Length: 275
Image: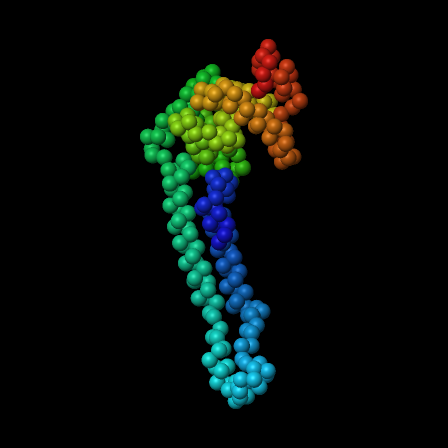
């Protein structure tokens, strides 16, 4: 329950990282576990003895014969496991309704159709400019190609003319381009993903090289979407640092030692700034 509430009220990154379905599947699984344990007759909670103690009887005059009558009054009936299960389901249903409202009013799904179309057109225009050809950017709302199932924020066929990115990436880029909303590393990540997939559309297949080129091109892309040059360079430098700190599970995306100022992968060897 605490995690569900944290998912609703917590930071956007939590909602972006953990799908709503997973949250409630875990909560429902715990409810079922409690129900099964109760039906199997697991360890029962020991009811404390609330009858007068011997010293109290002697001091205040309680008779031994009063025990049976008092026990009938104080002994609670055993609660039904089904009642507790139904109460838990009711709480989950209320939280699910609240989460559904929250999710519908935030993120990419909160935007109307015209706004989404304008965002897609703007991103496709920027990607076409970077790819030196007409390409299309798709926001994969159905998550058929990218997202938490495919473990990817974007996908593109090398040399193709279409790329798909997650709705979260689209929303962060929309916030930057249309509302001037800069969310730190989230904005930097969104720029890097779009630039990365665009370099694949240009024909680059190696993931590490593509990432290096993307972080350099991301500076100009970020500026065209509304960032100042200093901010764009800082965000891309942060992405470069995070790339080098990632674990072995993303080794193929790790940039090489040539991804540096004056290195073989420097797109502007005559310049003094990198990326």
